[in-house]
Image (cartoon, rainbow, N blue to C red; front, side, top):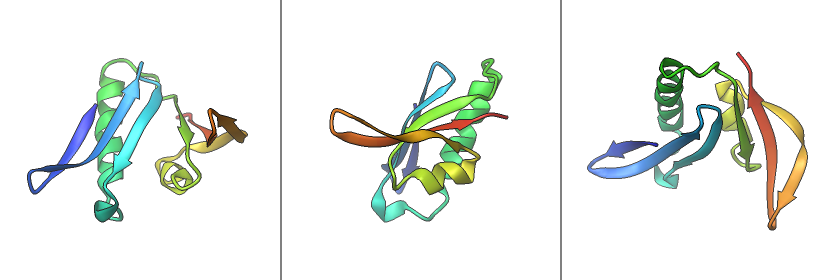
Amino acid sequence: MLCFIKEDKIVAVIAIYSKEKLSQLFVDPNCRKLNIARQLWSAANEICIAEGSNGNYWVKSSTMAIPVYESFGFRLDGAKSKQDGIVYYSMQLVP
């Protein structure tokens, strides 16, 4: 897990599980549109590659986050799904 700190406060986090599942990416609403998500993604990806990742990642994305993940190169990989009342879309990044 990586954190982005701005003015002594954690304003964003990213977590990747087993070097393949992007399991968490949250940015404080007041800090969106500042390129923070991209910076965290870039750093997390570099660490995973250095630790042997093949660059294939997947994520269960909310509707709101689809454009963010698409900007990282992820593509929709299936239809809308629902689990425990939560709607998500599977997305995958293949180098």
